[in-house]
Length: 396
Ligand code: LMR
Image 1: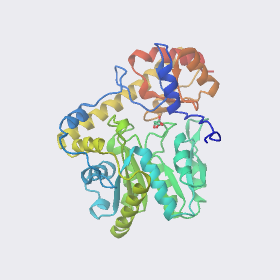
Image 2: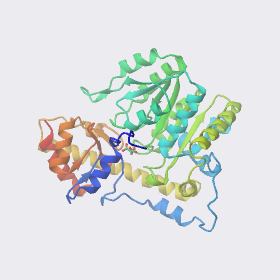
Image 3: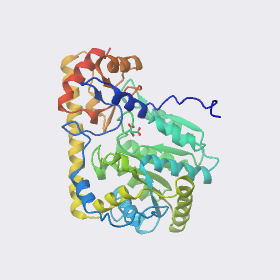
Image 4: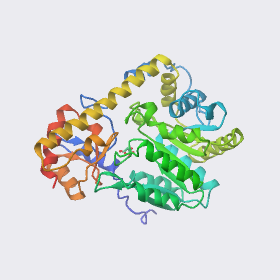
């Protein structure tokens, strides 16, 4: 019956994790998937999350959530993404639902857009997270890449990007990462963002923000700056957010999709269509994780504690970036490795080519994604010397 079903080639990120887990070498280092490891080399259970979990009354039956998710969880998403008391929320112009992580937000958002903007096409950065192609292309959209990463300068091909945006057909959907760009770690400056927004507004485009790493760049509020800026202008936009990384709750699938609309009437219609999209996909979201997140974010003391923990994770990532840069600089003074400290968030584009990535994995047990992306949040004191020494040998 299924003879014609082709074998799955595997996913460049998730399948690599399986290969890593099977690798018997004790000194192996996982810098592939976007997991944050603490100073002891463990994916942490945050103190604030653990306290929130302890407060959950497990005698409450696990009935289905509404299609859009729990109201308190959705309110907490709006406050986290747009800031407490944002005008768009107060005016009822934001339709927010609980999604299965940031990926779920992309999927529901893409299905919603495909249904209501069937002639639109999507633009995504070159390069981008590999799964953007699967999720957004899988919703039936023609996909285009806009110029982004400049290997020569380790910066952004800003003029070319803007020139591409200036020619966008009306109602084009532009996928943007507001902070900690995956995979490059390079974000536009605020000045550049303002120019991007102006062009997208002039082209009547639809910005779709994918905010998976809020808090890992400059801070929880700072990282959401461009999202809030667009919302302030009353422009229709979508924003997907995730608590996978910043609460270390990867497997709980806790994310959200917020559609900021010009009017409250549009927002209520959009919310209804988002509910319908969820029902068609998976009916309703998962309960437990949203109870944890909602308990945490709706308690002022726990929320403050969490903010402190996010700051600690961010500081540690910065320290690991600097540690790697310093070590590589000492071992290979012929190379410019300052990009490690100039990039932001969990990921760095190392410039390693696929053959060098293979060598790093096969000879040294250090795992990066084939594109040369490294999860710097997987570095910790005990593996830093080894990773730097291995990279120093492999870098051309
Ligand atoms: C990553 O990019 O490594 C993460 O977002 C995990 C994933 O699902 O790919």
